[in-house]
Length: 69
Image (cartoon, rainbow, N blue to C red; front, side, top):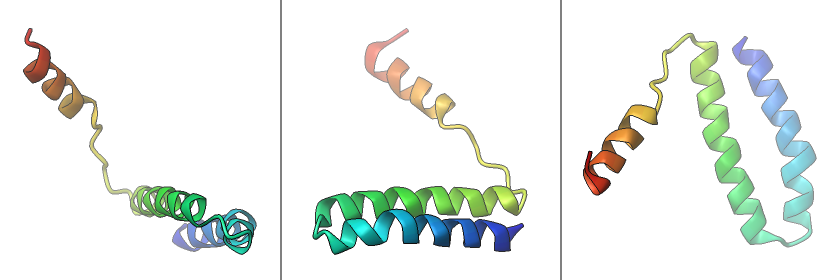
């Protein structure tokens, strides 16, 4: 499963990021690369059956702390 994830992301990088880099869109390249790396890490963790906690509880706690109950 990990091999499939790596191959798919290699294809995504080749199709999406290489043309952006060649067109000298450096800011777009770095934003896309950052998002791709984050999603790649999450995909690898999911393929290893590692449970990823939902950020909704943390966001809820922050909003309650800022706005009150």
